[in-house]
Length: 496
Image 1 (cartoon, rainbow, N blue to C red):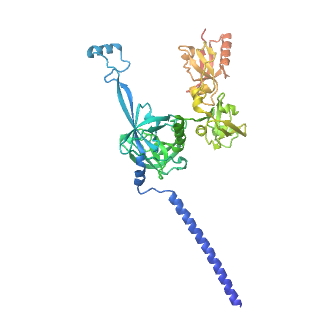
Image 2 (image 1 turned 90 degrees about the horizontal axis):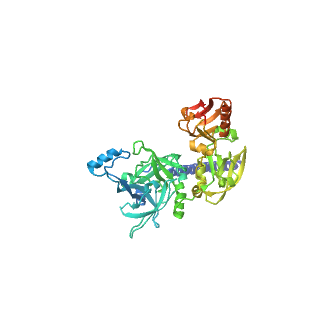
Image 3 (image 1 turned 60 degrees about the horizontal axis):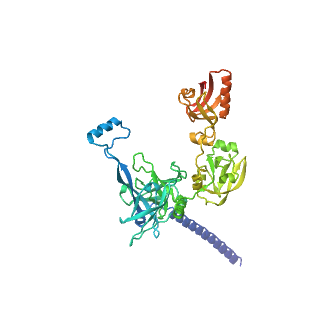
């Protein structure tokens, strides 16, 4: 009886051990399956891009533009003295007059709506064009009209007149935010006018700022891109357009493996506006901003250099109405984090005009929540609200020195490219052959001290000149901050 019981216990234990082993084996198999799925999703390099190219080539088009330019074959260079012209006329009759000729340029584009005939390209491809032709893969030529363009992102939208019997092939704009550095990409375009050409490479970098415009966020790729590829698509391996090839870095003029594409997610908003309104309608906040350095972050009590520091607020703009103050650091806008200063213009631009959105700012060591109604950038630019502020000369034109001076405000900083930390009084103008001109003082330089006393306004310098004349001083000692750094200059006081 006991033996039977023990055997049963042993059997039960063995059965339990076997069950545990099966669970472990099942978990290992599941883990292996997940790993295989992840590996397949990583998408290693295909054996060939032929199938993808065959599918996408019909949607990529060549753009041919024509414009009239003036030229004069044999014309004398501009600025040649009159007596040479008279000699030329005696020998040849008349100086050649400018003649008109037709100039043609080539680029690339791609179809995004086969039914409506919508084609995307770069703005610089069709700029100043009088006639635009879209040439398909089979060399069919279609007339195209410009629906709208956006120089800030270098995007243009065309509409072609579809001929009877012609069927267009379209491609879709993908999600460029999902692409990672190292992913495979394929570029198709019209390099050097050769027609549909396919090149492949990887994403070399993201978020590149090449100083091409206010919304730079380029995808960098080493896929070969040359002249004529402009406006063509950059595809992922699923056949989605994740970028519009726009620029290359090329000391030689040819491809050196550094090309730049406008991300599809930026292009989507622009294209939608161009299709609906014929122009862009970007959000506008009405602030001037700068980067937050580590030193600034520490002084403001921030946990690190992030956000956009407000240096000025446009009068009557959305930010002023939302009670945004100079010195605020904008940390989030419409629920999106502002990780660095240059992110804010793009986030605001992509926000729907007229919407009231939340915004978080850092003010005097505390987080403050605000709500702002987004304005329209294009309207603000038209009425001058978003343009650079004007620098007006103050009444402190000091004839004794030969200087016209102004306060160091935001407008002066922008005009003369002065750093935020600069102090003093800005030199707006220098009279020729004046005492200041003789000492090499130039517009844009700063007068930091007069007679070893700090100054912050033109009126203070005017008063210093008046005191020096009362004491019958022949010169005035100025501390100048310029390109060479700080320097003391003794400027003679000229009698009025």
